[in-house]
Each structure stands twice: as structure tokens, then as C-alpha cells.
Image 1 (cartoon, rainbow, N blue to C red):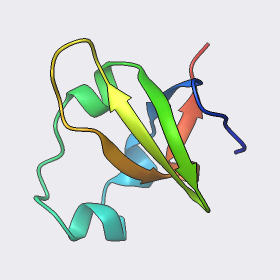
Image 2 (cartoon, rainbow, N blue to C red; image 1 turned 90 degrees about the vertical axis):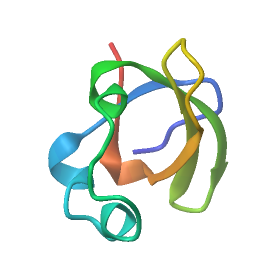
Image 3 (cartoon, helix red, strand yellow; image 1 turned 120 degrees about the horizontal axis):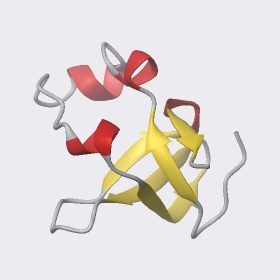
Length: 71
């Protein structure tokens, strides 16, 4: 998926669970990753820096194939 800075996305649970990224951190993924839209803040290679939700949450780098564009 080719997304640009400013695009609104959602995390794909099936692709994020059990991924290398999920295993390298706390295995309990926060619900906001799947329940809220995120905004692409930056991209580097196959990764996108995403800010999720309207409440203060940490920005997270995710592979682009773990994201889908919001409708």
C-alpha cells in the first residue's frame, strides 16, 4: 500500500498480531490501534509513523502492509 503523509489509516489486526513488531514489544496491543483512525505523520521505506486517536497516545512505526486506508 502506498500511503502519503496525512492519510488516515487503520491497523489490520491479523497482520499486526504475531508480527515481528508485536513480538519485539509488549504483546498486549492497545485497543486504540484497531478502534480509532490514525494519521500518517512520516514514512521511511516500508514503514509509516502513525498517530492514533484524539487522546494522547504514543506515535508508532508500523509496516505499511499492516495498515489499510480509512474510508
